View 1 (cartoon, rainbow, N blue to C red):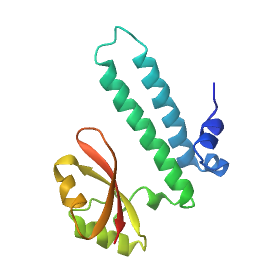
View 2 (view 1 turned 30 degrees about the vertical axis):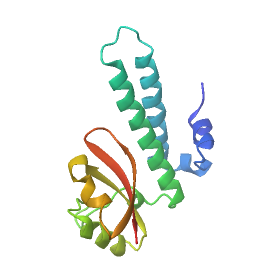
View 3 (view 1 turned 45 degrees about the horizontal axis):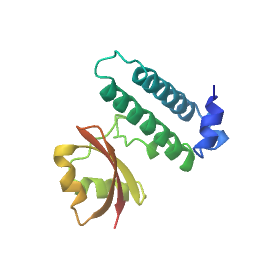
Length: 147
């Protein structure tokens, strides 16, 4: 069985990531979600197993992706979450607010979790370039880059 360090190395997450509590927990949870997905998929009499497998494996990928983003940004929690003045996770309404947040944080890209019903507003905007990384049928994870 692979250790957390083995998995981190295979996906190019630096060993230093294991020293950061948040990144380490993300990697550990990613491994747990992956193993759970495989275990459920291998149960022949488990109803809804394909759907549960997909949900868990997408979750595992998302957690590992967040650990990589943290590592690439010197373990700054702001690289995976945007907070308001009260320390609560901020919600952005509209493309202009996404662009304003990038300007405020002095970054050229941001990850956006967006309901699929609003996805076209972001992807068709002339203010940002977008790359839809994944979706679960209700929400999409989108990498938005300033133009």
